Image (cartoon, rainbow, N blue to C red):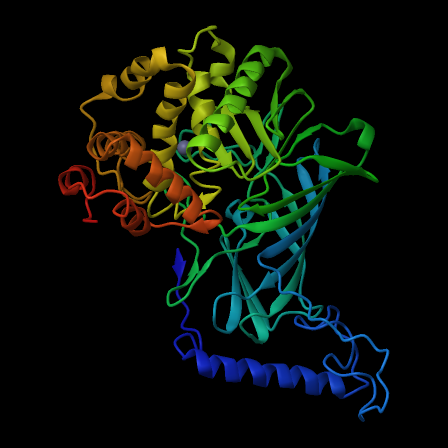
Length: 510
Ligand SMILES: [Zn+2]
């Protein structure tokens, strides 16, 4: 669901905004000067906590140089910071979480409210919020409806200032819905008999699109619906009894803290965690990047193949697209059929861990190469997964072929035949959304999308095609790209007429 809010001042000229900002700063100064007001729970965003931020402590000019240091402005965070402290009870399938969100308003205008996605609240009884504060005070109002948590601020948050939210909540996790034929979406949030997965498990501020509003789509029948801005994460996971804690798979290296482990991950769209007492962890270092593979103890052969494939894929994609942006990449064997990407951590469904055949013609290799590709087409280059799912899924599918060309060139034809040709004739538009009632969603978005990219490459040539992919990955690193961005950038790399290819695969012109 896209929530459109008409925000005051969104179209005002820059000069007016500057005047408003100066007025706001003066108000902060005046408030600070009006001692003895109590100190706010967090310092005023742009200044140090000195009550007289811009001046020395004397109200009059001093004849001699003062020793009081000149306060330096506290830099505004580039991204939202999420600090999560979670007490995880694996056996009870619960978590008690304290979440602190430091949100910098980079939207270019004041914000009267914040919209957060509280994904766990899609499950009745799962998400219980016990406390919510804004800068240490209760919010002016808040509303939790389905997955949407709207927090109304006591006063609009000016552009380029921060607000701090603290949310205390508990999760009573559902059993994963995969296998329930009445629910056809790939719902892997929750627990199984031997795994617990915390996915989109904390409320997060959804992207704000100037002129349109907050970007929060409703869930669809297929695919993923959430859209994420990159953020910085500081996550501590504790257990009631550390000695009995399950093995934890995370997208970052952990450091021990009393009762658990602390993880930090910057510039990431998500922070997913998976736990199992039955995990074994395999690791390899590749070009200063640690690749980890967590699999169940009786699937070590598959876990090893996933590890090797992921390490190779990181190397191939780093060279072809852009360097992998994190120190760690974690592959997790899901205790379910689907595979799913998160930033720095991907799930590969368990099925093909059981059937490793010892050759390159192995679906575990295909799936792992696909999920790792999402680190570029989803995580590094973000997109609207609900409305333009081809942008990450077609590119991830076609990246499987790029992986095979680099690592197993003798098996590229097998990949083409298995993945594409034997399913022909394919149907559906590549730019299908997750809401189009289309039973062949995967065929349209993934396979027709990959076919489109193959046709595009044949038309423009390898040099232009790969130069474009590299430019696309670099230009939109840590940003969100649209289909229009994709084609605009593509046309900078080729003069070839591609209108017939676009017409064959896309319902909308580009
Ligand atoms: Zn995918």
